[in-house]
Image 1 (cartoon, one colour):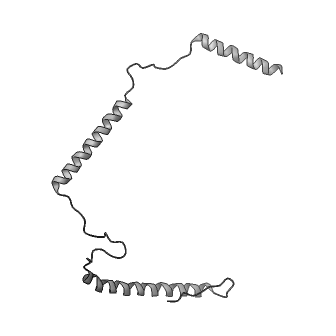
Image 2 (cartoon, rainbow, N blue to C red):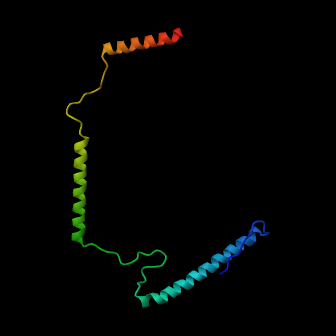
Image 3 (cartoon, one colour):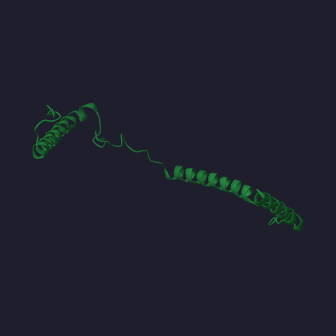
Amino acid sequence: MELPIFRHGANTRAGDLMANIAEMVKELQQERDRLDQAIGALAPLAGISKTSSVRGGAGGPRRTLSAAARRKVSLAQKARWARLRAENSAKGQPSTVNPGKRTMSAAARRKIAATQRARWAKLRAQ
């Protein structure tokens, strides 16, 4: 199939362009159908199952776990989560000595206030 070449400045109308695109899509779909038929004919000869398709199939039969294996995996995952939760809860516990809210002493507040008054007095003097 040959694709039409569109040059800049060529006299093409939007309707013609859309018709060409629609025709190309139709031809590509026909080509895909022909390929699907060819693959369908050749796949059994090669021993390829019909469940896997060219357009993104699973790629083979799914593996299944027995009930005992699923239980074993489940218990192992539950143990992992329990261990993780135990580690996080141990880290997240606050220490027994709770310092509480930190407050400034009256002397410290007076010292800061005096320093700020001196700073503003110096700025006003300039």
